[in-house]
Structures are given as structure tokens and as C-alpha cells.
Amino acid sequence: MTADPAPTRVVVADDQTVVREGLVLLLGLLPGIEVVAAAGDGAEAVRLVAEHAPDVVLMDLRMPRVDGVEATRLITERHPGTAVVVLTTYSDDVSVLAALKAGARGYLTKDADAEEIARALTAVRAGATSLGRAAQERLVAAAVSGPPARSRPAGLPDGLTAREGEVLTLIAEGHSNSEIARRLTIGESTVKTHINNLFAKAGVRDRAQAVRYAYRHGLA
Image 1 (tube, rainbow, N blue to C red):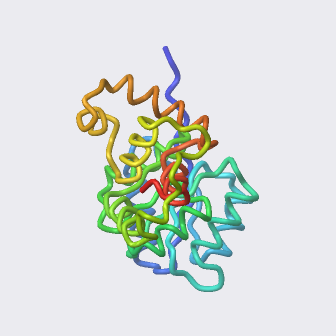
Image 2 (spheres, rainbow, N blue to C red; image 1 turned 120 degrees about the horizontal axis):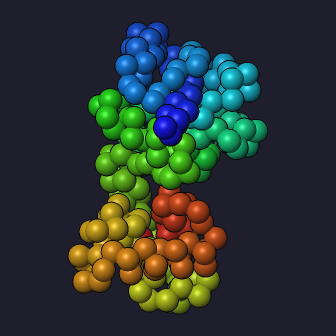
């Protein structure tokens, strides 16, 4: 028999006691999830990560002493084996971008259900990125409100082909691989090939980094 995979070990960080305790109870009911500690602020979250070495931190943003963005930055710098998923009330573009720049690999709002939270925890533990719809929409809004198209560089950076540029733009708009395939009338396997190529050229490792790269180079 194949042994069951080890559970995803989670630290919950939220300054509201009712919310924090509710999340601990909720996560405790989910298969494959083990809550190892809970923090009431960012400083405590950083300390508990050092103590327990969890797979994932489920991180609120607005907390006393050390907020979620700074705690995320400290955790990702000091403990690269621990991923951070933001779970917050706030979905404005400033909050989303700040969290992603700090190193968060997931971003959900507090209207997310248990299944969506579990998917995000599993995804980031596996090295992927998980952005809720609200976060994706705010990233697109941030891009739209950025510099006008005429200020964008004429050529594509880092040797990207025109097709790779198109795929990158669609990623930044929040489209899945299947949606990109339909929009460009190509197969999903071709989309995956383009994504692998553009990730290698751009030096990014996941979709969140690709989105930031697209904004930085005016491709979204």
C-alpha cells in the first residue's frame, strides 16, 4: 500500500480572535490539513514559523505590531520552505501588489469557501500560485490604470516572441491555460510550451511573478 501523503502543516495568522479560532476549526475539518499554531499578529507569525517550520502560513494583512505584508517578507526571506497565502478582507490593488511583492504565493479574500482555501494551501505547498478572482481582477485594474500604451517599449524584453508576449498578456489578465488556448486558437499543450519558454526567458517561476513581470515591462 502507498502511504498517505503528509498533511499540509499550516500556521494561521489573524488578529481577530473570532476569525482566527474559526479558521483553526474550519481547517481542522479539512482532510490533509493540520494546523500547527495560530498567531495574533505578524511578529508572532514570524516566531511561530521559526518554531514549527510549517508548509504554509494563512496570513491576514491588517495586524498590529508587524502587519501581514512585512511578516510575509520576513518569512519568505528567512524561511523559503514556507509559503504564504494571504486571506484578507482587502482586495484593492495596493494590498494585492504589496503582498505579492513581499513574496506571497496566494491571495484570497475572506469570502472564500473552505474548498477554495484548501485548494490554495495545496497549490502553494506544491510550488504553484493561487490567486482568487478578486486578486486577479485588481491586478488587471492596476495594469489598466498604469502608464498609457504609448509609453510602453516598442520591442519585447528578454527575447520574447510575439506569441509569447500575447500569452504573457493573457496570463496577466487572469486567463487560465484553456482560456488562452481558445482565445489564440491553439492547443493547450502549445500554450504550456509558450509558458515554459517565456518563464525561462523572463526568469520567473510562476504566474504571480509573470504578472509582475508583465506590469513592469508594460505588457499588461
